[in-house]
Length: 214
Image (cartoon, rainbow, N blue to C red):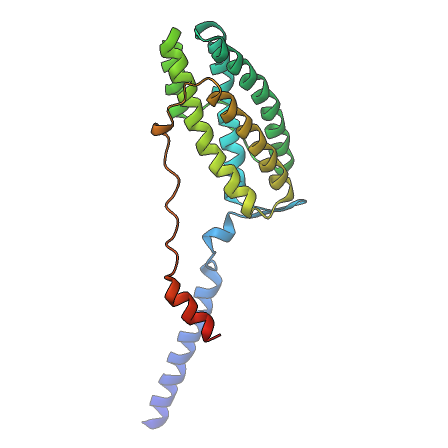
């Protein structure tokens, strides 16, 4: 009886081991989602944030270049006309840099603006005079503020030297464009997103007490 029981247990153990081996062979190993979005290039690891930056800058140019053309015929302010021409020309240069960098890194770029940008273009295409001037300046100023934050964030943390260079150049372009737009005197700064609230500083008494014990 005991021998029979031991034999059954031995056979059961063998089935368990075989089942475990089958599961290991059939089931794929777990993959870290963040690591799966990285790819290696000659200039270092390329992350999802790096790719997203190239896409965002490309799309910025795809609507700001036509908007600059609108400014030449629809703006009333001579300064808005000048700013539109400046931004349009510089975005042509930046777009070339974007496409060259994306090609080198194997990143596919879109060929049309995103839905929000298409809506802004349609809005401006239906306007002229002071209404166009106001919307052109404020829509572009708000958009530049958003892409500036993305450029700065990626520049601060990217592990890829090509993206570092690209982000640095992009920051320079965006800084100039914000200054151009602000030079029109039409930017409504009260409508721009407020800077993030800084983290509260530790109480002075606590900081002094901590230094005493270190």
